[in-house]
Length: 511
Ligand SMILES: Cc1cc2nc3c(=O)[nH]c(=O)nc-3n(C[C@H](O)[C@H](O)[C@H](O)COP(=O)(O)OP(=O)(O)OC[C@H]3O[C@@H](n4cnc5c(N)ncnc54)[C@H](O)[C@@H]3O)c2cc1C
Image (cartoon, rainbow, N blue to C red; front, top):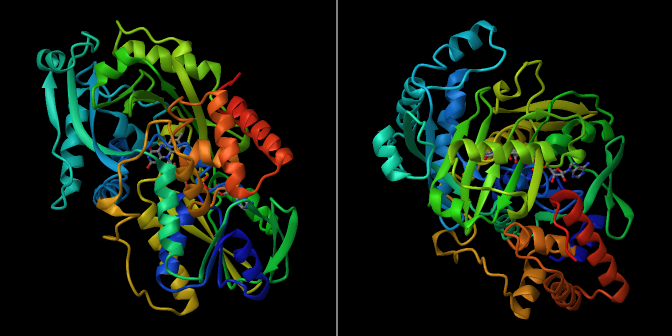
């Protein structure tokens, strides 16, 4: 069904389940429920995978540092899910060797006990001993279903032979494996399109938002036609990520489930740094325990993260202070490689929908997930709180199981070994900027493109990899206009909208 067919079908046929929010958790739950034959409508007020799920650091990882918080269940689950992602979507999630440069030996040993006693303000930098211990546990969690090799621990001399541009002040370097999600946006879209193949009971609409509630009637707003329509689901799943509480307020439910924290990233065009890191992620912390990542993204280098509490998820932007911080941290690990602001081709920022807590240090807030239940009269509302990109499948399964129990339906199948998209037969992601007219036309038809920025920011890697120029954007606008039937006025509006988003959210100025 195309967008119009879906909107028309909703007039005569309400869904059983309404999922609000098409980030990875909403889409994962949509896939699981539709596989069980449940009539499900998924909506997002913007494009699919345009919130936290597009802002992630792209790591499919267990989160070795959560071991220190005693979160063994979470790490075990995430390691298993990482392995499944590498197996089920091998063209989009690949093993990523991850190296930790270590500048101390004994530091950090007291982090875990102090945290347990509630006496830890800021964790101290982790030294070689505690990292070695963590990696032994981490390898153990991989168990029999190993998709990646075990860790290797190098002393200073051998580390500097392997990575000659590393800071000579290191004491050790530990290398272990996680996964790299090459394009979170495409992976999410492939999951969604897989779900829609299940049949007409699977309906997904981007640019449709929740407008309000009256009894058991939910009003939705089509952002494109600026019209509203009603649905009467038996169950609502609030998968609005950092916007869970504002979404609940629109449903007249007063909740405080999330306490969002911001993280940011830079994409750098720095061939020297790119050559120095090779195929490795460098994962390290500054002396107050905050994490920084440097890793290869095709021919570019991605640098980022930080964990700062924010009030309004819509206001998250990568600040100049963060840029200074990231550039400074690259200098700590690769001191003789110069990184400058002119090499930044793209920036992005997003907000983690972490569970609300009074924890003093954002890095210590759990990344675990859970479902909160409220009621709108007879309609249950499940809020999907917390979680990591990596563990979306397990979280979606948990939410779907609860929904099936409420609906009195059996689970017919599970998603543990289900290939995503074309699985291992999928073509490797296209990274060159030369798209043919036919390729754009096909994407427009198959991939639910509504706006020009959907194409440039999420269906392709053009913006992320810094490949956009004004003439290229104009050509793309013309081709998309042909596919989607835009007139001159719409073409102009799309161009203005896209240039504004690129400048405001990604500091990409095209002239
Ligand atoms: C900086 C950063 C780095 C991260 N790095 C990693 C990592 O490396 N690995 C990892 O595993 N995890 C990582 N995470 C965590 C992971 O990205 C998130 O936990 C996950 O993406 C949350 O997905 P979600 O579907 O719950 O939320 P979102 O992706 O935010 O989806 C919510 C959706 O709801 C929509 N919405 C909101 N309100 C409404 C409404 N009223 N009506 C309709 N739609 C609405 C939004 O438009 C949005 O698309 C990171 C997160 C951040 C921010």
